[in-house]
Length: 184
Image 1 (cartoon, rainbow, N blue to C red):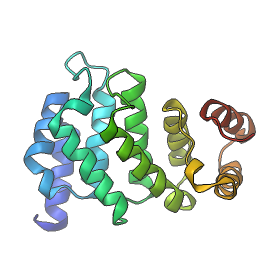
Image 2 (cartoon, rainbow, N blue to C red; image 1 turned 45 degrees about the vertical axis):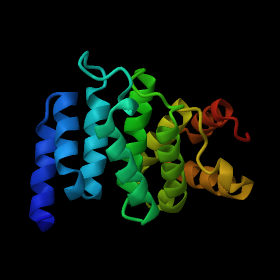
Image 3 (cartoon, rainbow, N blue to C red; image 1 turned 135 degrees about the vertical axis):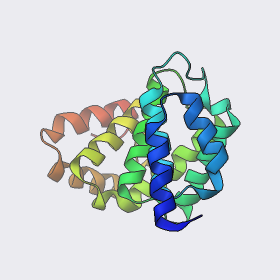
Image 4 (tube, rainbow, N blue to C red; image 1 turned 90 degrees about the vertical axis):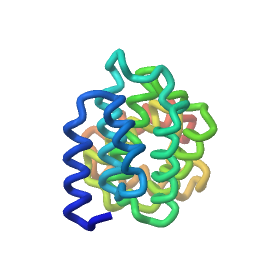
């Protein structure tokens, strides 16, 4: 690590990569140097590139991607991933899954989603509306409801909070809840 300047330079390299292979190689080379923003940026970049033909058929089987998911889980566990990073990573995972490039039923991916879900429970009140929308879309796309494991009281609090932020929330939220098996 080289501190903040090195993290910024690394983020610039991630955003400039034009291929999935380039991002995955960079992740493998720099895994020990990635900070929370770099991890979120790598996931986001992979989410943007998942429509490329060169994107792996199932990126979850790639050891470089697995290293990134383990790091994201560790960052969820120790609190390094904040609201924006959690929303961006969750959204990218949803995009890759929706594009058929990420097997959401993979055990490693399931562990990562559980960590993200647990973290979103803790940081949701710090999310801006776009982050909330991205997280809701991703969880619905993946067939999940954040907080389902945390009980009805949490889901009601989440739903109430979302209603204060998102325009036309009732229809959106009801649709998400129906698709994910949550309450009305």
